[in-house]
Length: 76
Image (cartoon, rainbow, N blue to C red; front, side, top):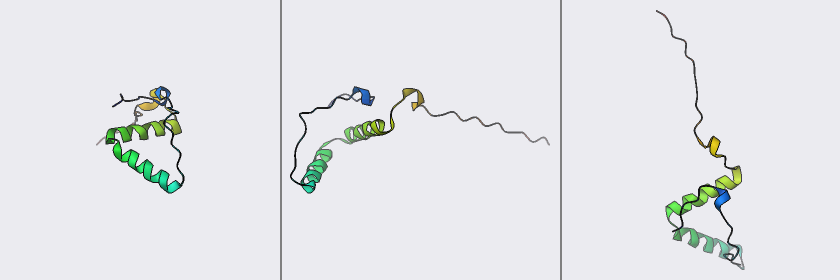
């Protein structure tokens, strides 16, 4: 198994891994078989890479935002 990838910038496209299908149904069956052969960790890693490629990745904003709320105390 390959080490985890932290960002889209570390991913390289393997142009030799492409396969041509004669129909969309045949491609869907092969696609489903491929992902069923992957571990859940590899599937989640792939989803995260797709998310990063679609929405971008900025490690500075990867943390949770801090929320500050000022509450007035009632005297009584």
